[in-house]
Amino acid sequence: MQKHLQANSSNRLLPVLFTLALMLASFMGFAQTAYITNWGDSTVSVINVATNTVIKTITVGVQPYGVSVSPDGSKVYITNSFASSVSVINAATNTVSATIPVSKGPEGISVSPDGSKVYVTNFDDGTVSEINAATNIVSATIEVGIEPNGLCVSPDGSKVYVANNFDGTVSVINTATDTVSATITVYSQPRGICISPNGNRIYVVDGGGVSVINTATDTILATATTAGLDPIGISISPDGSKIYVADYEENSVYVISTAYNGYLARIPVGSQNLGISVSPDGSKVYVANESSNTVSVMNAAADTVLDTIAVGKNPFAFGNFISTYTAPFCNANFSIAADSTWLHHYIVTDNSYGKHSLSYIWSWGDGTQDTIPYPSHTYADSGFYNICLSITDSTGCQSTFCDSSFHAMRTTNTMVYVNVVNPLLTGTKEVSWQTLEVVLYPNPATNQLTIHTSSFHNEAVMVLIMNVLGMETSPPAPLLQERGDAMIDVSKLSAGMYFLQLKWESGSVVKRFVKE
Image (cartoon, rainbow, N blue to C red; front, side):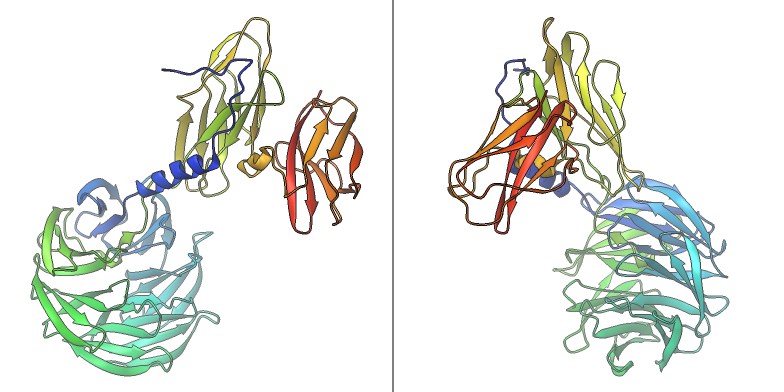
């Protein structure tokens, strides 16, 4: 049965734990997403990892090759080898938000762990482009070996390892100086490359095996033989115990133990597989099969193929192509309740989230709107009003929420007021600290507000007054440190709701009052 907030309602604020539970449930509804570059038709297939279905196809630059997902999952970077550019996909909307010119023949790509930089190998001119992720501008061009292909960034962001296909080397870039600090000779034709989760080892596909590099010394530590004919793609499990190698000629995936650098299994997949990625939870392995126009999904525990997904033409998907999250990255949400201290007044607590900064549209149900985060509203006419909130975050993610359980109702003879407050202020329930109890009177107040404390407190206590935005409206002032009353002049405050906070070294108390 639908409930209405009437003028004499005594409903309390919704519990904070319930709000947090709703937010957690929203996050749990997120699915991981795989982005497959289709070299032959210049598209990217977006796969929902939970259902193994293609949920969208995105047109990018000509001959997309490499892919890398930002650590927060909000952006996906695609190298367009023929177009000499990088497409930036907004993961919230699955649309191209920017195109960045780089050098000739970009192939491999990797985002730094903090998401601030993107590194691209330019196969045709022996360089690496460094992109500023905030501005989408190439901030540096670094010369490396001949025909650079795959690359990876150390977990601390201090080094970039680049596999140079033609000259059989790995270039080590110092990211602080954007210069090559070391060159490591491997077996032959290195292509795919990945780093262990702890950053101690680099694994490079070269010739018929995998070279293992000690990152502390930047030297070859061991060689793991795959027995494959043409291994290209490589990925490592989240716990670092296994590496997976996609062999282009044998149409198989080789599983290698990192404990002893030995062969564990060989799994037949589609035809001419190139890109390979392990899901963030380690349960699945996705393999792009260029000639089959499919993606094979492996069960990582059983080393068997679970599913085969049809995608675009000639899928390459070279790099880390699985994101941690998918849209929505933002969520509009609020709770509404009657104020227990101010008749005909409702408090709306904004619980929205997204990548800052958020833009707001509050729709009050009476044909009016506000576009600030924490507005106040007065209903001019009687009626039932359903409040809605729409937000847009800095990634372009959009979300709308309408309160479906409660409505504000104004009768003919009463005015109804609504104040939106920051959730940080919803500790405004009547709180007491140990034996320190506080009473504010008169409430509502006109010129003077009295603070009555029922017990002595032996620490220095300060008083702050904040508006509904959480902004201080008066400088801190000392409160009497003894049983009794303290008086505060509120005559210069505008009419509305305020929060009074008593602060001391070991705690605080927040009380709510209304200025008439």
